[in-house]
Image (cartoon, rainbow, N blue to C red):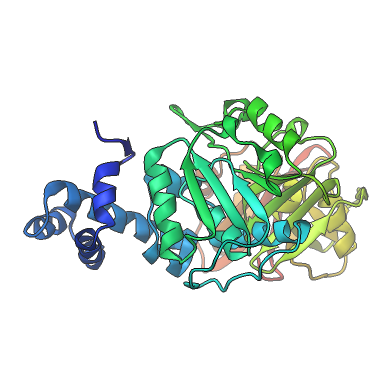
Length: 415
């Protein structure tokens, strides 16, 4: 029986790597965006059904993958599940660079585009559950020698193909194997990205990860240095004592959290903004609470996840309007990459009738609706507002000292 993962078949994938298969893939790529039936009919004139399906599937996955991998996607191979869990190129490169600063001296990093094959060198990293190889590519490019494992033979074949596609095959060795059997103590560092999907969909419970949380904890306890990729919403009680937890935001969207333990790691919490490379570390500062000022700041999600709202408030010389709500206010404008700034025009108690009247008076025909600490359904509210006019506005639904409120404002800095 052929091994499959999603809509990809191991036997067909193996054929896809042959010269004939690569020709089929190139032709499928040229048909991207065409009617699927017409595309399949065209390829079937030259190739059998299995190869046609594999080529069209890969071409479609490459098209989807450009959002994560940019131009690299056109040379990579994927499975549907592997693409979903794979780390965005910029995030993987950020993590590999940080790992490199904690590792023994190693070979120079490679340029991001199609490096030549190099002999094994540099610090030895084991990737315990490598998936389609997004992170192992970043680690190899950063100068590491990577030994990787995954339980699925097809996924291993895809990861190997990706390493070869970028001339990294001699820096990377990939095996079919269970993460529980990995011996992290034999390497300079451990990297692990447990699967966070079950038969019922995405899971936010670390105990439901694959490998499960007890196995993960055992691995990192035996590693000299460990880097663990987890979901951004990981409960704080799962963060290992003495570890560093970092939340990463890419273009304003929180993508993941990473837990670091072992040699060279300073315990604490921090956030990172990409592509700018800004970092913010917990200092223990507590934000004051006070009345609304002229400006409203919406902290980046990574700072909020890392419980760094107090640090953001300090950066802008601001305060909280409510001790439980992550909106910051100030009397004077301040620029920071860690928050979007808005100029407040008015604050009113939440009431559909009052809000509708306030927007009508300003001839607001389009609103951006934000909320923190509010149970209001945004889309239903948008419909109920019955907007009409040529102007735009940002409205923030929130609580101010436990009173449901609406902040009417306009952007004052790039979001």
